[in-house]
Image 1 (cartoon, helix red, strand yellow):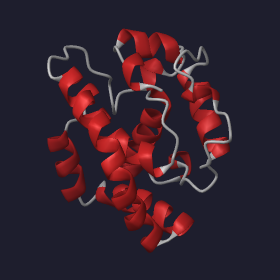
Image 2 (cartoon, rainbow, N blue to C red):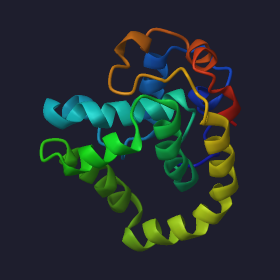
Image 3 (spheres, one colour):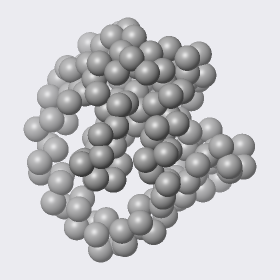
Image 4 (cartoon, rainbow, N blue to C red):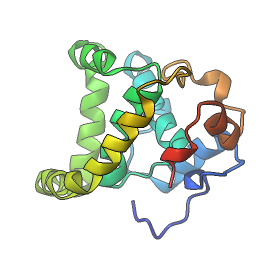
Length: 168
């Protein structure tokens, strides 16, 4: 997705609700598989990932795609170990493959890996800073159980979980 398109949910002080931000995310990203149209057994993890894009104010550019996973692991109740279990789960792992396939379908395999190699060095200092800032975190964003947050403002959610420093 192009940074030229202004998305309200990416504004750190957005007062739109998480639900409104999610609708804006899907409208701006028609190439993304809409989990609301997929089988329930793995749609929940895709939806949680998309909700994370909105909560953390991330678009679908490679920089934000590489940023969102560690940010999720460090600030939500979905940790790296949960991600590894998800990758091994035969019911849920197709959701991870669907996200990967969306990226490949949109841009191609060569673009995907070249982008990762190009963007990762730029992102590394921010990742180190994020890790240091989250080592003593006590409040975690609910990853899979995000429904109670849907009708709350993004600003309120970001303040409650101390996420504003991570949103540009």
